[in-house]
Length: 267
Image (cartoon, rainbow, N blue to C red; front, top):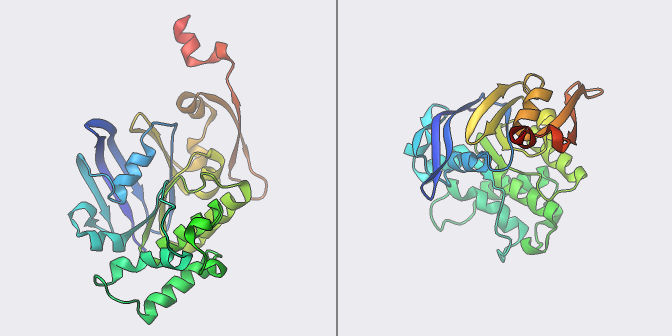
C-alpha cells in the first residue's frame, strides 16, 4: 500500500492557470474523491497526478517519491490511470489493450512472459471481461470498454489508481459495478466524480474544488452539507442517511431563479 500527497500544486493549460495551490492527501488503501462543478479543475488536477500535464509549481509524492522527478517507467509503476477519454480506434483486441498495462514492467520490444500473461488474464477475470479477450476493442460497448481499460490499469500493478470521471457514459448498473470493482482492488484511489451520491457512497474522503482551489475537504457526511452544495454547485440539497449503509444521500433540486446567486446579485 502507498499513500499519495499533493502539496501546493499549480497547473496551467496554454498559459492559463487552472489549478491553484491544491493540497491533497490520499492515505494508503483509501478512496479519495475529487468533486466540483464543471470547470473547477478536477480533470486538470488528476492529469497532473498521472503526468499528462506538467506542474507549474508544487510537488506530488507517491510513497515518499517525488513523482515528477522519476523516470516515466518508474512513475508508471507507481500510478495507473483510467482517463476520462481514451481513443477507441485502436485496432487491437481486448487482451492486447489490457496487456498494454505491462509496459512499465518490460524492456522495450520484449516479448510477453508467462508472468505478464498471468497478470493480464487475472486482470481481465477480475473485471469480468475475460470472455471478451479476443474481441476487437473498438467493437465493445461503453461499459465493456471501461472494464477493459480498468483491467489495463490493474495489469500495471501500480499501488495508486487515478480515475477521471470513470462512470461517464455508463448506465446505473455499470456505474455501481465499476466502482465496486475499484473498491475491491484495495489500492489507493483518487477519483474525480460528477455524481455526488456515488462520491459519498464510495469515497472515504472528499475534496471539493471550485475555481481551481480546494474549498472543503473531509469525510462525506461532514462535507456534503446543504450549505456547501448550494454555494458550490448552485442547487438546493436535502441530505439524508442511506438505509443500510448510513452514507449520506443527497436529494437535489434546481433552485428557483429568484433564489439563484445571479438573481440575488442583480436585485
